[in-house]
Length: 264
Image 1 (spheres, helix red, strand yellow):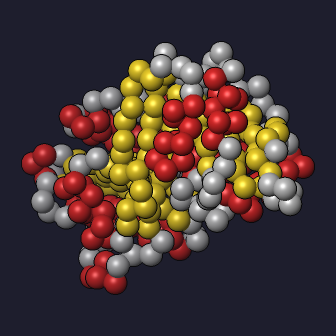
Image 2 (tube, helix red, strand yellow; image 1 turned 135 degrees about the horizontal axis):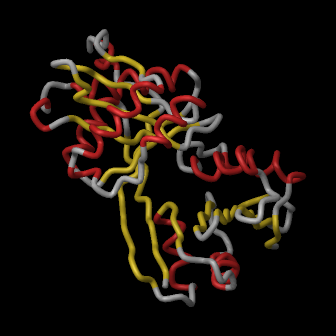
């Protein structure tokens, strides 16, 4: 049975989602911030014959994210999405979205696949790094951090603004660490979509002339150590194998592919 979820379903919903905190980073975070009663956010659940919740579908504005640890009613999820005039995007783990994709009536405009990795503990050799020159950012660092990201080609499509970065560092919804050299910030790593169980690592960047010095690894280690100590799982996307190798040396492991579909 498929039906809308409401706040009375919260405990059973979170019990299912927290079996995979990193994989459900976005769904958990959106529920914790916006709940079940917003116009722009809705949730549906599939229940089996025993009344157990076995799958969840989140709508956040024009994007839908499904999650199911096993078999689920992919056609039913697709019907919910196709009947929504605002539906423009679907994202999620490949093994789940691949079941919904052929059931959708809308033509797909773009499909992107990224590696999805998570970290639940750091490799033991990570303790050998000297992290004394890694600093945690404060709101006054926002301008220099945004300038650094904007100067790096890989972040040319970034939507980060000075106002947003300063707000995140002020309200604690995200955090950043950085290394300075020659009087300027040359390397950084940040979080996004933090919730009570997990966080995403984003914005790992180093100025070209300061690469191959281990700066990005040190920023990530400081960031990850702090979050893991808080009991949170970490996750990240990547499509560059060289970057993936750095993440794996720290303690990240591939858990599949994250798909992002755009529909006409």
